[in-house]
Length: 151
Image (cartoon, rainbow, N blue to C red):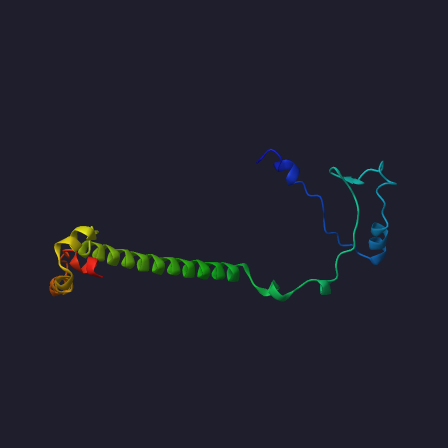
């Protein structure tokens, strides 16, 4: 990464201000091919060439009035909002996971084939209602499986 550091950090362009328009015009007419032997015509490994600067009317000046502190404040606000959204999302996921674990402890996985064989078709509904009443009377009780299999 740092092997080409010196090569990449050598300045290859400059913004030059001339005292008069005549000097600017002379620089714009400069042809480095004709003066290749003249000292100062090569800047590092690049030949010198001059281009006219863009007019101030070509520059979009809309966002030039914001200071670095304004940008820092905006970034800080964005980080705070992102942190709050992530924290709220984490809390919601945690609550849903806790609720799912609570439901899983009341209604464990069960083989309904064995439960179906134990009860007759007409009594099955009554036993499912009894199972529902059993688990709703006191929180945390585990269902015996008739309610899960009946539904």
